[in-house]
Image 1 (cartoon, rainbow, N blue to C red):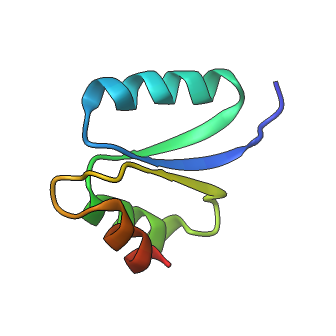
Image 2 (cartoon, helix red, strand yellow):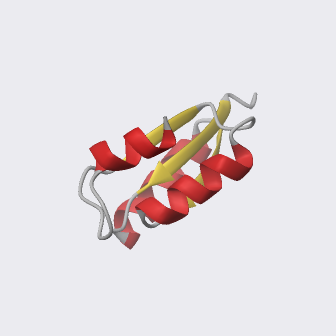
Image 3 (cartoon, helix red, strand yellow):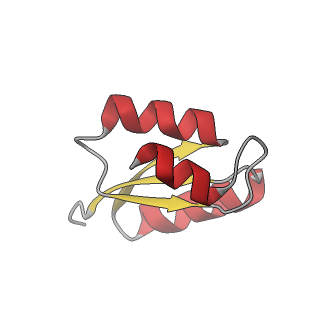
Length: 73
């Protein structure tokens, strides 16, 4: 299978994260997981050149998706 790109997946629910990562990997994506806004921002700052897409949960324990998006942007 060809590598399709790298996704930063941000979700605080472990089951959602696990299932989503498995599905995305199965169809050819590399997936980096983050459990909260702070972790997502740090990962993006350090690895932005390899990340092609961010899938961001709106309700996170330390912030909401809109605030996280603004900080990443």
